[in-house]
Length: 379
Image 1 (cartoon, rainbow, N blue to C red):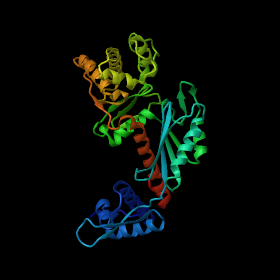
Image 2: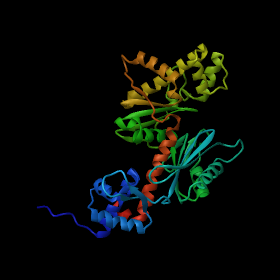
Image 3: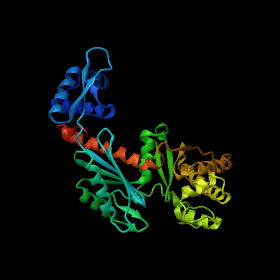
Image 4: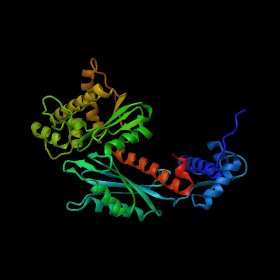
């Protein structure tokens, strides 16, 4: 008969404590009986660990359960002031902030355009500070999604060149906590992978059209960032007759298409696509060309990576774009079948991904601090 595993009591309490905290984060307030069922621990173990977590300020009473039969049982939940994380989505025009708790619940939100002559870091710090006035609790970390190439050390490479991590370091100093910077399209792909359509796919490429066109690539359930963070910069894939290095699709391209078609070049991509849906011939021609270019990008990716599907997000999921992509993909189907589906989160996908990553990192940070020997047990 095999001997049961044995180990130091502190290690066992840490593992059991982690199981209970993760369960409460995932399921919300639960009774002791429900925790026994969810974790597989004995009632004695659950009671002992809850006593330890209560004394550490990790959990708190959360009312009673009146839905099950029998006497009402008390419920416990993660302490409401256990800690907060900020998720930030930055584009070329504005910053969108949410504060999340360890369960992933949004506790505060703020959105505002960047000032014409102002510092991006100061603007983000002000928005996060405004959110923190709404909800109490320490700010433990920040996850920021930005357009541009993000290197392994959190540096940003955009049209102005590499910043050497200056944005990340300045934001960390301004907020007084660690900051993680990610490419916004990669965060959108993570949102789909963990909580959206992509959760059902082994591999996919998310194509997000906003100011530019970017891809988030998931292979065998893992986000692929590339050696230097360049993976997914599909806006510069060669397309005949465009010269190598020319952007395939984005604001500048759409302005040129609008000028060529006699439409207002100052209109946004979505405004042109709305006009296409309304039947404007010049806008329809623009949508057709944009759909052709996006489909060729997908075809180029498919020939190298062969993903199960392409998830369209941002303006790429506009009805006019969906029709144009479907029409051109049908022409390619005999030689290269392509499957396109729509994002579960639309233009909010990067922020949803940032919030998910922020909540996950917050749980790891807070739980490690609360549980004795947690760092050692997680290795």
